[in-house]
Image 1: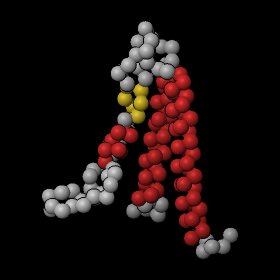
Image 2: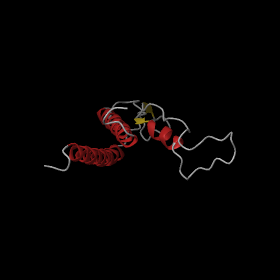
Image 3: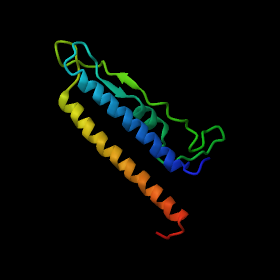
Image 4: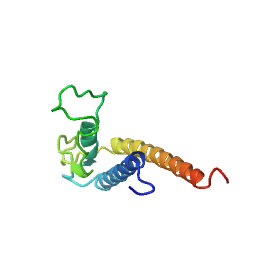
Amino acid sequence: MGLLSSRGVDALNWGLKVAGLRHQAVAQNLANLSTPGYKRVTVSFDRALQGSLPQLPLATPHPGHLSPGTAGHPSEPRLEPVSSSSARPDGNNVDLEYELAVLSENTLHHQALLRQLNQRLAALRLAISEGRK
């Protein structure tokens, strides 16, 4: 484990990676807004992460049960096409307003993650300098 490695920093790293990939997906969708037959893409990581995180405290009354924290690691985030709907006759399913809303939400999420990472680094700098400025 390196100097900056911890579960919290690793989680922030994953979050930033997913936010970057989500931004890439939205940019790709917006670039293909008027491309006939284009299907919007989304990040598949969220579903994998939600499935791997326990929602409630877990008890293991039976020795065959998985212990908390060993439910598996989330899969690598990737872009996946969404082909479930097509609101336009040309087969394109990109909605400008929806993509802009996702972009705004993702920007706020990315900024919050960066703020948390900066706070952790500031605490580390304070510890290294022994509280001196």
